[in-house]
Picture 1 (spheres, rainbow, N blue to C red):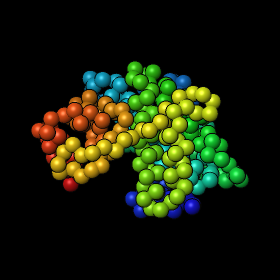
Picture 2 (picture 1 turned 120 degrees about the horizontal axis):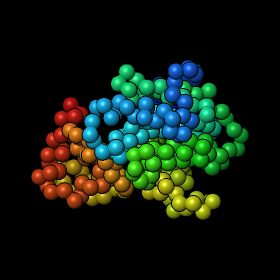
Picture 3 (picture 1 turned 135 degrees about the horizontal axis):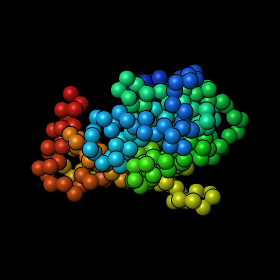
Picture 4 (picture 1 turned 180 degrees about the vertical axis):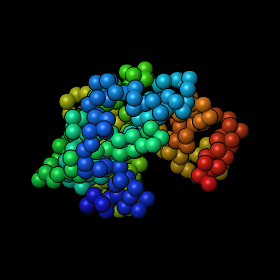
Length: 253
């Protein structure tokens, strides 16, 4: 399946996240990883949530960034492409609100004959995410597993969407990404089982309920509440859950 076909319908806006162009004023990803321009990239969240725990600010910034990165990166891997994700070749464009708005890259993926899944995902899982998420975790003084769980949560959502659309390859990719506890090199698989599906714990919400493995800390930002996939939800009272449900529905309207 082609890249545009995978990112169609409700996923179509994600195609706009990657731009085949390079501008000198874009933030080089390498400068975020070495830390020299990371405070500049995170300044908008720090201004909008002054005094909030840095770990929560960094976690939410990472989610903004991952929403730019992952749909195109994973769709490319599913389509049999090797994506241009070397940190030295990626620029980050910030929007008017100061948050991640687009990635500037050299191309939108190159076909590699007979590339296995390890080759397809190497640019993302070896070259790109590990150094970036390690730097963010260090800067925010939070567990890298929280950031990897945010990545896994979105990847699982994408693959489940394509599986529901009848794409059999999506299940193969999901098994390869999420099932092994360890990778072939013996290292821990930080994408292992990023979400779980449980019986509903609130009558208006049907089963199954999809929950992240780890909390993203959004509720630590002033004015924010737990998201609808927060793993802390089953521990809350029915009164708290109904209040959250009202907040989520109001936000959607």
